[in-house]
Length: 640
Image 1 (cartoon, one colour):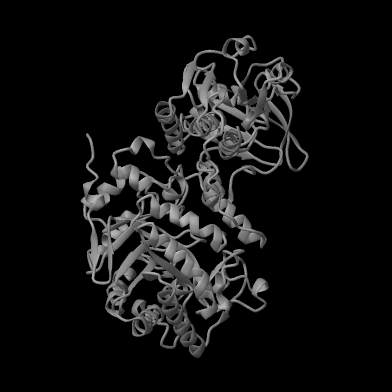
Image 2 (spheres, one colour):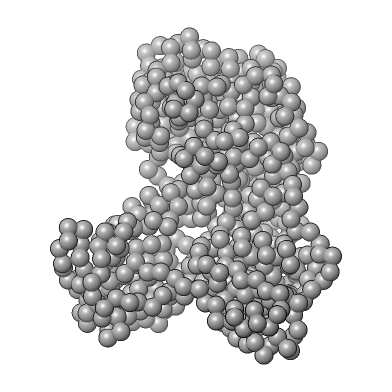
């Protein structure tokens, strides 16, 4: 049944802000400087999004989040550069608000040169530092700092502000009974702990007047044991509106929460119910956000009255034109976010290391390059042969075709996608199928010739006479050199996922990286008794954003032996040496190898000898992840 998207394009009118549709870009940390941020956000505005929210912007030097190039609005000299940002976004037809923040106990005291501050002196599980408790007077001063930053935002041309009252930063620390043990005016019950944000709202409204939009982002349920519950949020949400909030942005948890919020294992729209509950008790627009990455879900949220606005960050990062494509009925062209969390892994790595924290998108390599316009029309159209229709080859073909080249893809399999077709088979990886669907449509609309079921041979060079050859034949699991492997039947992880391996009821999986663990979970969910053997630590190639949840989930399903070396494969299992240097035998009906990949480069030498211009990309160049492959394909597509 087709879904009407008309509801998503109905205007939303507030007394101090009018929006042309129901989409807004939710805030996301980027690590970009202003010059890079301007084209990044302007592209999303140009793509049809009604309202853009910037990433967190610090209001006080003692509350910086620690990202290099962090946006600041701490004093008047910060106004001018941000005015350029506001103007650029508004020139593209969108409204823009700036998110104001103080990191509280998430501030790295070692980096700012002084101890971090918080409502109470309770150590942060996120950064591991003990904060200093704010005095009442200091808390009063920070109320003023937030309000003054809002006034500067107005002077810079922003259409409003959003106060960051979520995710474990200072305002949410005041709201939570877990981190606020105060006995002064800023402590107490749910309404007492809301005094800090209520004071900020009232002071801000005095400074900016009634014709300026103010939003509060808060966790309706923060996912922390002993933290904010939905029941408490119902108590203070109406008070936020009474104090001056024009909109409420409802989120679902702190950075240190033990409930996953971002990975693809989290169901789409998992936290919409929180916005729906808050909307029932307030008179201002409420927005839903989190794991909303396709237009049908967005329309359902609005049609059901669960929220007034739909927030997207990663979905708009993956495709800046998401909104326009939805409006024009071109939903098959949308490059969907797969919730792989590569973007957050990049930011978290930078924050934790104290180095550069820049945003990258696994499926959209153009993120951060919007100002450079890398996909330029070529001066001369060339005939390009792409060998292999995995993610690297598909992206190279897409970009080369967009630049005016005549592209032909050769794929020996009967379908495109390469290893992606196996990667979405394990539990909770279904989102990755959208990549295959996306590239299938791109092949059609870019008039790319596709030869399926045809293995490329060097003889084909003389037939098609390409100007350029792109070798993207991928990688395969390495042959096992473990004693006994040649004498016993073993399967590869690929053979298991392809579905024809008869593994029996007990399985030993050798290799505890992502491929091995996902294959093990695939088998465990089919009722097999699985033991994973890894000579180092497990999941070392899984990003930090989802690693903890992934490990927690799989440990419940199988036996995992880390720091364990396989000595020999036998007909009834494997002999291993455990972390205490004890030999033991693991009984198993079958053995699955998922340890190491090697590039498939059989054609490379022959192509090099032919003298044709050629490129080796993706796992064919070096085995890697989907994000590496797509980035490689994009880069080569841009230079052909």
